[in-house]
Length: 269
Image (cartoon, rainbow, N blue to C red):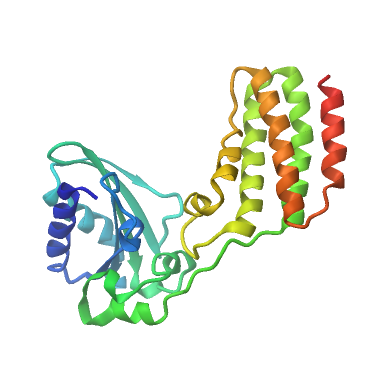
């Protein structure tokens, strides 16, 4: 991250340590993996005393107000609950706008699955401060994470069912339904590739997809809906060919792919 955000993070942690309700803090996201760059934002996890969790949003936001120029807005995740709050902030820095994300974990519900995600792979070097070794204790029970797992047979069936559907939407030139189908095709193809190439036991698919071969990354970028339906049709034709190759390379049968391909080509002649 840039120097402005580094100072802001340092200042935030200094103030957070003065609040008894905040039991500890650790780095999360790219800064915890040593993968951050000048464009990276701040991902900070705070462990909150359970008796104070209902006031944690106001408390942690008040600290942020003191270390940045101003808060432009706060965006809360839909999964926020009594166990975890993920509050994303768009903030004004001295020279720009930046993101500052706070992940608040309720110590009384630390075994909640959403809480566990935020201390998966936690190591002592990630800790920024630790009151009463509460965070160190989480290091000892930190989940190791896991590589991508999915049912390849179901992924292939999902892909082909929706690919066949794309033919009628191309003929109707129904952009919005085609957009939805293309999204499903992208998700299924990406998931299939991750079952083979995933190399990191943390993060979501957006992180993991960087580890598949570059050529196959380029293939996934064809799943985009354009106003030029002729180009979308050509992209889909080529994408199905790539999907067939990937399926065969993984040892899965391709006979149904050939049936769907022939139907699709015949309908769109």
